[in-house]
Length: 149
Image 1 (tube, rainbow, N blue to C red):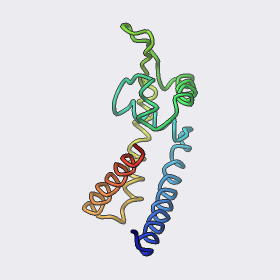
Image 2: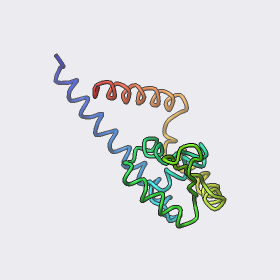
Image 3: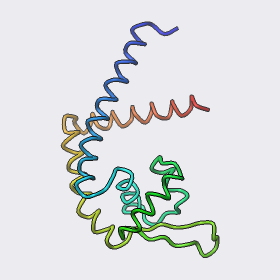
């Protein structure tokens, strides 16, 4: 049985994580807005920028977005000239999305600023503390995933 103090500590951790997440994402999202992107559009472009061409059917899972919303985001980015779609030659059900030269140039400008912004936001932690936080948050995420099975 869980002690009351353990329960209270879990609640406190939730609040602290939530507040930290809110502050960090608000600052990051503000930067994306300065470049005319919303967070989801940035996430799609960033995935393609770093991982290259992807099947549209897989992008939503990689950036945690529902497939219905994915089509809307892809359409918007394509209209702005930031990405292209191509149909798979061997399986017509599969559509690939790739970042264009214009999209790459945009991310060439945004990503270094984004990276520096995050470095400054997380600068209160040492490299060792960041490694520890990464390990602990991965452990937490994986344990929650296991609970949902």
